[in-house]
Image 1 (cartoon, rainbow, N blue to C red):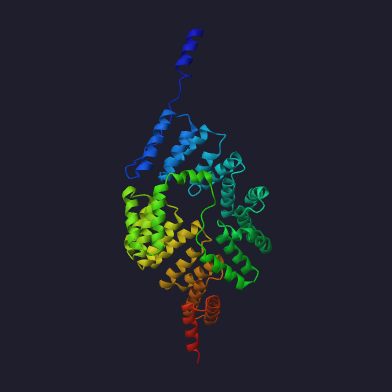
Image 2: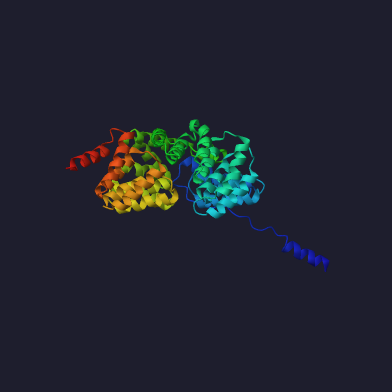
Length: 422
């Protein structure tokens, strides 16, 4: 009887469960080097299905290629196999932030406790995610831990300054921002926040000056993150081409930018970053309807793309589809409510649609996010004049001209008001 029981256990309960196989994807449209990395990673998983490392490496390759659902599956498997490591859990949480914020924050909190304390990127990312959701009481201890290790940590000081500003503690916010004003990663946002501080305290002149300085600064790179850098390193050749195309567009060398983008399209016709760049190029070439179609393809792949929605709004504006433009810009604002440009742009679209009330509200919101911008003051003055609010229009025009004496739209408003006087 004992022998029969032993045989039964061996035949049933002790049998190994089938291993999970790696996700399959079509790599035919990818850059050959990245396609090769994915194929090699899939084979590595088949060879060592119980290795968290090989599942995590495959996840990174999927993420680099924008196969995000497959990347989530592999990061989750890697985390299950290496529960003491926060690396894969952290990368999983970043992919979850847009569509699954609850799960993302839970995983991010767990990851922060597992990664080495010397790696500040995960804790900073957690704090920023909490601040963006207004969960200041939870974000503050995370920022304080970063500052305990480095009292001058510029990125932590910026996020803590946001919290202080939200609590109307402008003086404390200003003190926190000082070291961040000269750091390459934080200088632009620190100048914008300090501009808001000055606006709150009635120092309108310095608020405008700080906002103007911020506008002249290049867009900063994200805070260094060694885990994300591993993913980005898989895209070195493709990223170099994308950076080159972007630089050519900024220099308005559109024919050369088109040639570079054609290389990217031939390698990966549905890569979301390539589609975003191509859509931007079509807007600058005034091929507006084509730009809209390309950007909709981008958004079909990356539904919560802030820049994709902004560029779609610009494409609709380019087509004179004012309401459609305003809707796209509002969708961008739902993702980032403090994005000044996304407030200003719907103001322009609503003004063209003869919705002065909506345009005025949009311009005022833009000024709350970026105080002292002369272009926005001038646009606001024009809409106020259109609605017959002459005194307010003159105040906004004067403010625009105080910051920029050559602001053409404000000069026209002032001249119109002067000529209308009896």
